[in-house]
Length: 135
Image 1 (cartoon, rainbow, N blue to C red):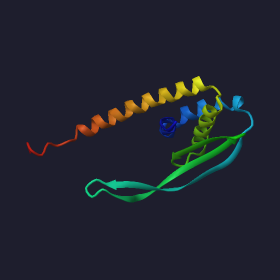
Image 2 (image 1 turned 60 degrees about the vertical axis):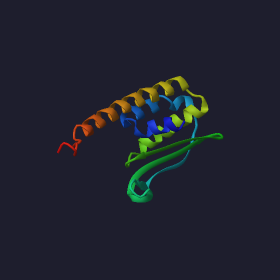
Image 3 (image 1 turned 135 degrees about the vertical axis):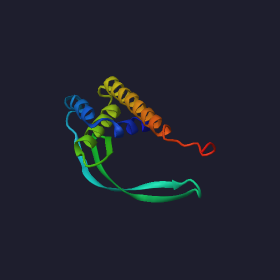
Image 4 (image 1 turned 45 degrees about the horizontal axis):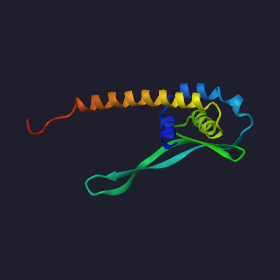
């Protein structure tokens, strides 16, 4: 589930919101416990000394919903409350067994797109590497 939440936290907001709309009717009545924005400390580790420190604050949007005794949670970077609510809806649908195949397929597709984007970013970073021994 952690991989799923990590994928949903980075998923394209427009696709995520569109997909979550398809879940609303099947989920039925839900309770919104929280829908808010706030600042979260960004932890980092100094690789030279191995010491943890806080690099600064990051604006986050958060949604916490409930249906019966099941919870759905979403937290995403930025001020997009709708996207964090969409993430919580997908999380709740998976927990409730609602459209599990569709949710799993959506998450798999988004994970594939994110992996491709990450690989592209790493290729562009690698192109800037300087070999100091030949310099």
